[in-house]
Image (cartoon, rainbow, N blue to C red; front, side, top):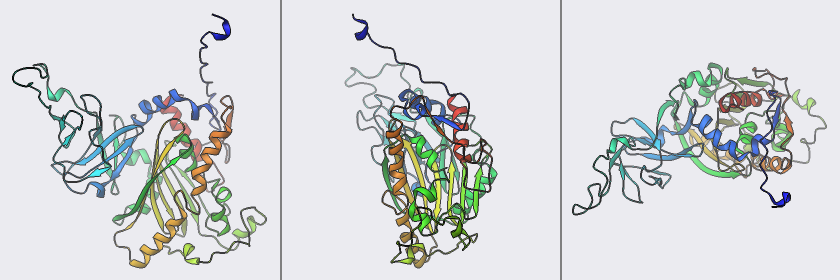
Length: 416
């Protein structure tokens, strides 16, 4: 065979030299890495968001979700406890639950061959296990309790359900860290939440690009013209960045502007007197807490976000859908004791977020711009050096410390 036609071995991805301010582009594009991430990260010592407690309020209520790319069922069992298990039949691997959610379940039955599972994911029966008329059936030594999908350990925090597959995962409060946890609880701890909308969008990029994006306070007033034009988020405003001890969880806070903030943005492309809001109620804010925080982004490693922008609140949950696609679920919520006026205000402010939001629509496409830009740049790396080289909390949002924190924990877990 001519040498030019002989099978060519694929080169190994270049090594990461250890500089956390330089993220090699191959980590977004390597298909084999996605499997490694599933095993070492999503199925490792982390807490994965599963659902809200209110999603499974009563016995037999259930939802399906994903841990990375692993399908999972979360259910309220007969004792009122929360169980979570892999959504995979032990027989031939089909999904046990096909829908997104349901209620009143007594058990679960695989549609393919009717193998049945109880509300904790235990295999309860096998159709025709003893055969028919004394013929066929499973071997005599087959035992139901030797077979079943993988089960997750679950915990709850402020009405949210998280799960882990790893025995050594620390308690969730330790995992998130005290300082980040305090800001997490600012939004969801004191009042009962109520879902007011949810949907999923598909992003044209690797999931880690979005994990960076939600930790990247540097881009907010530059990419999002609406933010800067209407003084919702400018880097000259007060606020800062808090990073957890493990590096993976963070908080970005933006304080309400004052007149002095405008001077720092004089002449910036994102500010123009030509743009006026016909309906000023879109940025009419009630200081609920009160602490003058207008933009609040809390991240929980690896792929969960609590957001408050103006009076709009949302959870964001994102999972890989292949190496260059990410499913992003938005769950909008208010408080159960909202006045009608406040609920209307929240619904107005929700127009800032989502794939067509005045703000978030840019986040839906910019990851695709990066994917296209790095198509042949596997040997190169991004520069993540704003605010230095560390992952410590900083009293400014002109920093990429939280992005570096994400990568520091990611590298320890994935061993890259």
